[in-house]
Structure formats: C-alpha cells, structure tokens
Image (cartoon, rainbow, N blue to C red):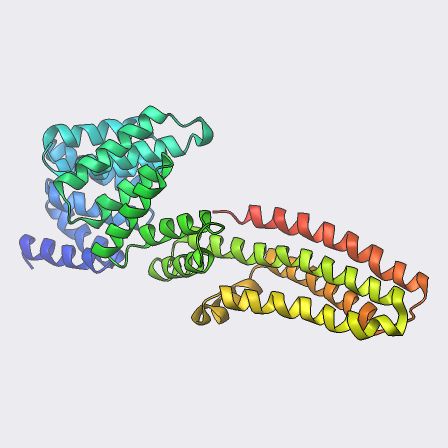
Length: 356
C-alpha cells in the first residue's frame, strides 16, 4: 500500500471512530516517512482520542517541526495542551492557528474553547472579560462556518457561562438541528431545562430525556449519567417530606384509635398514591425502566430510597394497627426520624463523591 492510500485509509478509520486501528496503521507509515506532517497530525488526533495525551503532544510537536505553518497542527496542539491544563500555552497555540489562517473557523473555535475551559476552571473567580472574549470568538467561528454544529455549540457554552441563557438555548437548539447526535449540546440544553424546571411546564421531564439521550449518544459522557443520578436522588430525597406528612397522619390516626383509622388509613394511602402518580407522570414512559435500573445501581439513591421505604413502612404500621402501646410508638418513630436524617446527609455525601 502506497503512502497516499495508507493516509486515506487511516482518515477513514479515524472518521469511523476506530482510533486504535488508525494509530496502528500510521505507525509503520511514519517510521518510513518521519517527515510526513499530515500523518503525524492524524496520529496525534488518534492518540488524544485514545487518552494518550503525552503521546499526542509528542506527535503534534513532531508534526509542527516538519511543518510549522500547519494551522491544523497548531489547533491539535492547543486542544492537547488544554487537556493537560496548560491553558496559557494552549491559548498561544490557538492564537498562532488564527494568525496563520484568520479566515478559517477552526482557530477561532479552538481559542473560544480554550478560553472557556480556562475560565470555567476558575469557578466563581472566572474573569468576565475572558468569558466575553471566548463568546466573541465562538460567534466569529459561527460567522465563518454557519452550518457547523460545533461552532454553534461553543456559542451556547460560552453564553451559558455568561448567564445569557436565552442565547445559549437558541445556540444549542441550532447545533442539534444541524447535528441531532451532538451529545454536548443535548446535555447542556437539558441543564437549562433543569434550571427552569419550576417555571416551565414539563421542563423536568425534558431534562431527564435530554440527559438520557446525551448518555446514549456518548457512552463516555459521565456528566450526563451523574446528572441522572442526581435527579433520581433528589426524587427519593423529596419523598421524605411526603413520608413525614404521611407519618403525621398515621400518628394522628393512632391517637384517635379505631375510629380515626376509618379516615386516617385511606388518607395515608392517598398521600403516597398521589405522590407516586405525580412521579410517574413526570418521568417519560420510555425512560421509566432505564431510570429504575440506574437508581438500583446507584448506592446514594438506594440508601435514600431504603430510608424513605422504612419511613413509609413505619407510617403504614401506625395507620393500620390501632391501639399500639406508647413505648412501641417511641421505639418506632424516634429511630426512624434519626435514620432519615442520617440517610439524607450520608447519601448526599456519597453522591458528591461520585461527581465526575
């Protein structure tokens, strides 16, 4: 196979997401053609996708030694350095890519991405001026490549960080129109839906769908899966208030004796049934089984759910069995309240430790 055919096949493998075979194919080619900047650039991109950041940086530096005027190699170098957290060097590489080819959208998009990642890494201490520059770079990339989904997604990300939520939402929707399989845009749009869950009807359900679709589109997207776990945990945690209300009804029923059970027990059941129907309505039907499976595999969610289940069981016993002695009520209720308190804080701490 000649050099041109090898590169063409390697490009095809890369486009198909077969990064390991692509890198394996490029190895012998680069050994016999050590000055092939294009092959070295492609190898760097493969290694970066495979998680070999050091190898990717070596390959792209070799590519730049062969062709220091390669805009594409400067872009790959900027992205790789950003993966290392070397944001200042990454920014310089992105600006060099723009200097070499100011009319190409890729350099502007890369600079926007680097500035955004550097600024978001500073948390609440982020520089608004740098955030605005990242947004402007992303907008310029869109003006140069209006049909490129990634550029629109970057506008959404940078606007999101500036709290320009309407602009961000519009940009994410445009990105999804251009590329329905853009996992980042779908995930970030779900974040916006979750933010507006108290003001928009159905926003919570759309957020669940968005996170689930993002996790399906990108199996390595731990953020989407974690956000689903957070939503499941919050659902279980919110049930403690329903359980507390039902427990109060059960205690009132217990105090009223047999006569109170006629009203108290149906009311107790009605409270839990209403909550169950409300949750069932919020979760889209096609996601109910996957969400239940995800919850079962998440220890923080199961910890909270088991505590709520015990709270419901104690309430049911108090509502359904009249005339219990005072000591048995104390032995049931007081430990249950403490169990609920401890389960909430322990499971919350466990959930935070699972954050990507």
